[in-house]
Image 1: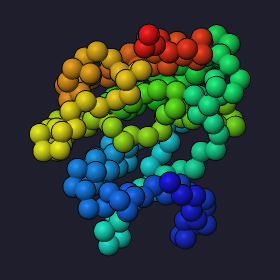
Image 2 (image 1 turned 90 degrees about the vertical axis):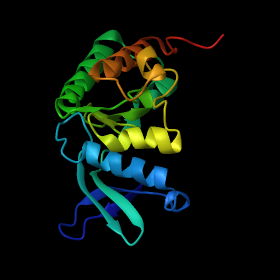
Image 3 (image 1 turned 90 degrees about the horizontal axis):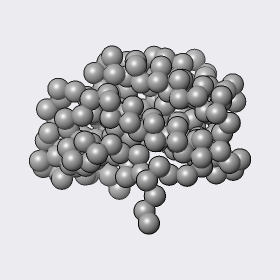
Image 4 (image 1 turned 120 degrees about the vertical axis):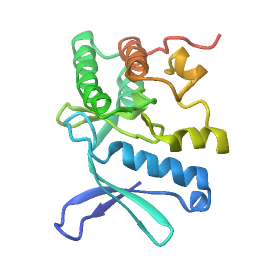
Length: 195
């Protein structure tokens, strides 16, 4: 991920590039392309907007709005649990963003504190669509069958049904993950720690 200048209008953007080590990996190239397709049309204050997707030679890229701030994960680690009114506001902001995502027939599949960026203006933005599921997209099933991409998500925040089958979930999976994230924000602890 790089900070870059858009040469057409001079604004600062974020440039996400598929790393050199993954350029020749068909599974990673497909996952990167699906990420781009999942987030390209989403426009909401609580989602980091993807402006453009493209490829130069063998290099795939995404151009996104720049959002400066810290993740909810970093905030809790640095300052401790979030007071309940602020935590509830954060959860509501994420829920509003998720509604737009789900209305676009996309499931994020990786809602967690590290994927929620708190801007200097107090807005919480959903980032990183790297594991997103575009419902009805056959390329997802091919990733599962050809490359073994069968369980998508982060263990501490993944709902049970997503752990069993990541390809048949709907938006309720993201809501479960949001609940686990809210618990973490309020307590500073994981909801189901390994003993």
